[in-house]
Length: 363
Image 1 (tube, one colour):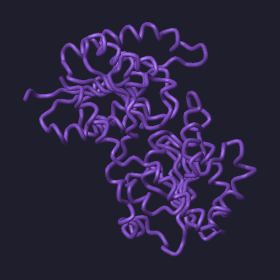
Image 2 (spheres, helix red, strand yellow):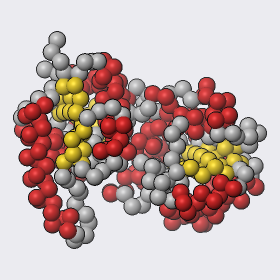
Image 3 (cartoon, helix red, strand yellow):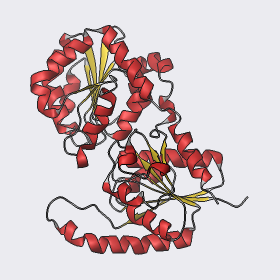
Image 4 (cartoon, helix red, strand yellow):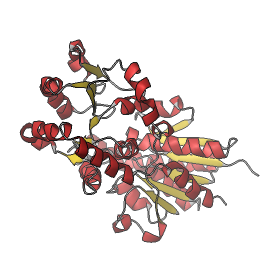
């Protein structure tokens, strides 16, 4: 059999990069001698994260349109033409069998060019409400792997496959890691552990809330693991002096931190929501209001509507947070019910199912 070649493109945020890496890893398991190339946007985090995962990456000079008049907007047509030309060069030289896009600006020109060459393309849409790039690409794509129901409003119905979002394999059985997790984070097994996740860069409003509520948490016999994000670590690291609090810029051992947690307070980016469904702990979502098309609120609502989590908007935190948290921490049955319901939404085989769809397209 000839050596297969795959190009993957996704970036801008971890939510687009990690699914692409998970898909590449699964393809590599099945085709150990296949060749892989990633295509991202220059100066974005994929240019570091992809090589760290062991894959080659090429960068396009591309960025999204801003909602206001900026120099970047004026340069957008030039960047787009430059990216289309570079994508043509990459595809003619590499000759991929399938091109896979997981969202982000770089996947637009790349999949557009792949379609014009007649190379099969697959889109993996993480959100419950697709972004503009994937909506445009969907008309020519061969398959569209989605994580939420009812996306035929945005995509051609006959191309949609409900797979779920790729998540890390090590999250699939965290129950067995509870004791290891307690030792790793030096926790007190008689206290409830509250895990705060603001995303890799951090979330200003969540950090402000947690700083204000630390004494409230400890008065409820809780200990706190607080991932504040690299932008905010200097500002909040002094709270590490508090004996029941650990402040971290980011967390390497996500499987262990999830195993340790009893209740999780989190942003609701698509990848986080998919992970939390697999993890199956009681969750309070605080969506970011600053995300395009209000994706995070829509992602969180899709779980809340199935009684799988709680949701507070940033604007409601001062008024409602303490009462909401108190009701949850004092009601074991409600915690169990939320855990059971969020687990029902999980799709643990998502990566394998997406790769099955990719394999169908190999000529």
